Length: 391
Ligand SMILES: *Cc1c(COP(=O)(O)O)cnc(C)c1O
View 1: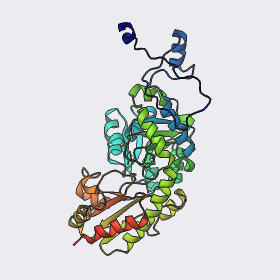
View 2 (view 1 turned 180 degrees about the vertical axis):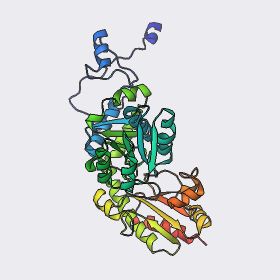
View 3 (view 1 turned 60 degrees about the vertical axis):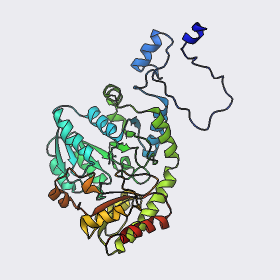
View 4 (view 1 turned 180 degrees about the horizontal axis):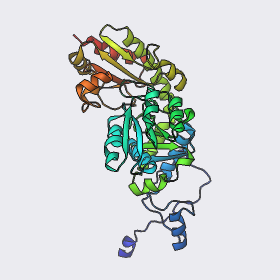
């Protein structure tokens, strides 16, 4: 009896060969795989033999997801990471070394900005921050020999759209590469590699998983830049959870439908904001009055995306009343099933000095919506009720 209880080694192939295949992929939680002999183990570790041996080096659920996303982006290579920040860190750690200079958009996601201008400076990488919507400013910054240009295809919260083709050309002319964080647009709206980008990062936590229940990232791009990616990923430990990969794969299955619906809802909501008295300005790349409308039409396949940013005339009291109305959850992320809102001045941009914040166009009355997949009537009614709460 005790011998049977002590035998804890799993039977590796307990399942008999099946004549059918499951329609849903299995989850592979194994941290380690069982090798036949030292020769095989050696070959697996050097990569001579393709196969799994240790989860930090690679696992099936991550690879299934990476393959699908590579196809979606038209990328030669793709890797899944533990978070969007993990993907940005992996891009930096695989492409940069001490002494390198990079050119970074001044409108990056807060943590990204800190990664590229703060954390990396500790490792000897210097950065120049520029307005990515000003291609001439980017060219001037590139007069300092540079390795990487880092921009977002759609910025938070003002939803500016940089001209990726112009930036790719400027970067390549200067011998640099273009890295695009595509999180706010997502692959249903923008494929940066089509416009000459070399590397793309996405937080799968947002639109791609779409259900607010995983944390994952994607790095994908050209084969020529991939040499150091696998070794950097496994050495710095950016690997993802197979459970999260499995959920994201499921989320990805409905992404096209979700994006269609959310984009249509956002277009309706943007028109509503543009007509309302309480609203001073509305930023939506699908509206003709948006400063980057033409670029967005070209780069986003005539879609405006699912994010809207607006500023209320009544400042902080108006924003507070709109939020406290409670019709739209104040949840400072994006890409959920339901419409959510964020208040940049108190969340994503709280650390930015108020005068600089206002220079960027972020006021106390500024609210950013991530439009969900409810009916358009529901979304518009929720907005109208929230506006009605402003006195
Ligand atoms: C959320 C986000 C990230 C970071 O992604 P995580 O999955 O939260 O680590 C990076 N860039 C942008 C634009 C984001 O919105």
